[in-house]
Image (cartoon, rainbow, N blue to C red; front, side):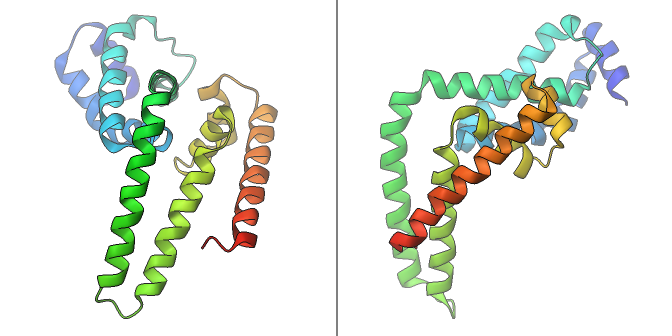
Length: 193
């Protein structure tokens, strides 16, 4: 079933078309949300809201963009709203969770039976540091970087999702990469890995 057929059937209230839409795009939407909110349960809740919004507003969908682009746009906006609405609460909870996660990883690294536990530990530490650096980027840079690197969208697709020009996306990605490079270099110099 093509996007056009799904859209037409959704406009007629077809539950089968809605199920097909969710089946086709659920992974994309959840991964997009997760890339921004960094919490699997929240990402799944937001994805559910995204599909409900699509179902309610399908009559407003203009076919001048792809359905997946519209889904990305809604997912990004919902995720950013979630971050804004839960920023203070999440910061404290995220800090506590991060400390607990680091403690678990330290314990696992010490008790791991692998041949190279230090290597595994270093890789986990690098992943945590990279995640923290990405999360510290300004919002638009974080969105553009996440869509580019984690969702593998082209500059044109990111521009459509974010309602920006392609040069603006290029600039955001350039600044995001420079910012990450600077943060990670500082970490490297401090030997935090």
